[in-house]
Amino acid sequence: MRLLLASLFLLLSIHSPGWAQDFGGSGTALLGGGQAEFLPVDKAYKLEVEVLDEQRLRLYWQIAPEYYLYQHRFKFVLEDAGGRVDTEPQLPPGLEKTDEYFGEVVVYYQDADIELLAARPVQQGTLTVTSQGCADAGLCYPPHKQSFSVDFGNATVTALSAPAKRSAQGMLSDQSGTASGDSAAGTSLLYMLLLAFMGGAILNLMPCVFPILSLKVLSFARSTDHDRHLHSWVYTAGVIASFVLVAALLIALQQAGRAIGWGFQLQSPGFVIALAYLFIAMGLSLSGVVEFGGNLMNAGSGLANRGGVAGSFFTGVLAVVVASPCTAPFMGTALGFAVSQPPLIGLTVFAALGAGMAAPLLLFSYSGAARALMPKPGPWMETLKEFLAFPLYATALWLLWVAGRQTGINTMTTALAGALMLALGLWLWDQRRIRQGMALACVIAAVALGSVRGIDSVGTANAALPADKVTWSDHGVATLRAEGKPVFVDVTADWCITCKANEAAVLLTDELTEAFASSGVVYMIADWTNHNAEIAELLRRHGRNGIPLYLMYPANPDAQPLVLPQILTKQIVLDAIEAVSTEKGEVAATF
Image (cartoon, rainbow, N blue to C red; front, side, top):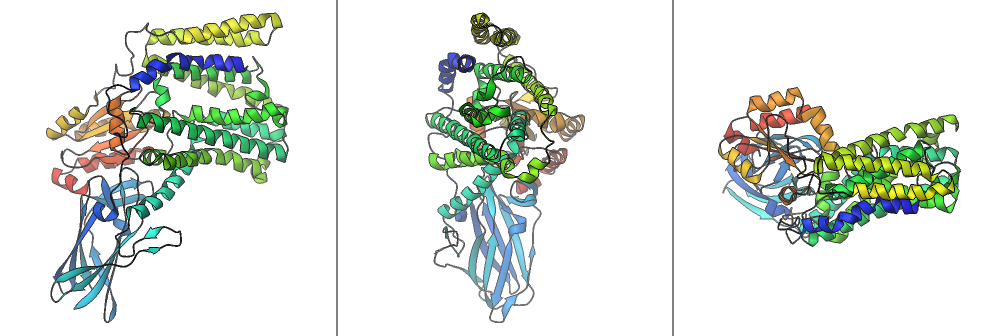
């Protein structure tokens, strides 16, 4: 069976030289030849305090492009010789945003102009201001304190400073509010590790991954505690090692000037077809056409032997491979942060993603309460195993459709013929020994058919767009905004399951189509099904390393786009449409 699996993945190696060469063209490197840098907090948010009269102060923040401040995180403390003075801030309207850290919030882009009214007249006092903001690229700063000595009589304001000290977490913090970039980055790393962990856990619910996780859970029904613990840890090792390996390859290619991102391997038709063949082989095994034993799916009584342990590790590797079309909530921000950092930090974030993905199975192996919910071992296990073959067949069908979109119908048909030969070869494999030579010949024929290219003149991924949608380009966005039209950019791909789910449930529904049309918002599609260096650069500019990415540009060419969450609801999109459909001046102020 090792020979069979190696033959399947020859599809990828046959085309990898040309595929890698395509990435080395004239496109812009994803990292731009260096690491992306975040601004120090005092440069991202510049605060000026002005005395208006003996009871009023004006606080004005200048906010760097693509950074924002949270309205609900402002705190103001004014003290004089008589003690603390009650204050009432006059907060200007901001932009409603669905934030990955705090949920539904109001934020300020470009500037925040706040008037602070004291409850009684003050001659001299000390003002302490706390604020918190984030960058669209993913970094979220810790709460930022700034202190000022205020002389209301002379209308003067002097910034106060305090020595930096070590916090309880061992990170450098500046009590005066001039927190260092290292402090912000250290806190942000903790945020990103948490986001990556949660995103990895959610990946288990994706349609490609869930059948594999189900099979592992199924294998626990007849195993001992020792077996469950051993195999869950080996599975965890396979998941984390695979994520780190993919991350190392991704970072190495990016630093070598390749314009690629998460899921880049699915831009190769050879890899897509090989993955489809693997799903077919797994499905046939579950259907009982061929028995692979413990070395592949690791189910049943073979858990304790050496092959079963190897099977657990391979199942972890397989789970990562099939998860690549998916981007779970929280993942996009964490991955964008990972590739903007030094390699060691980037690999740590990917390892956290793997730990999150493996955590549910690991916890299940130790949780007696969770296992108690399973029915007792019996014939149902075989029935469930056979049923789980059908999601695998459906996934293979979808992958072959993706390959057809990337290349053409002729290539897809040839790949289907290869799938037929593969099925025949696997059926022959378990027959009499004399037929194993025929089985190997069929497998070789399947690899050959799946490797055929050049019979289609052009792929169809970009051939037909939905009605009222236009193809994305930077120039096109600039032209439309110069004409006074807001623009929505949908960065998608045929192999991106999250993208397709958002389109089916939200973006391409009649309600949203009407909303875009009635508001005059131009819907642009950036199709990343095949490699495109310009789209990779668009992702880089917005701190993302994978898709989906949704950008809502107001008509004002000087205003920053609103970055929408990766999991959409109709209300989120409708709110964004309403935000860019208001008066131009107001929109510019909120972004």
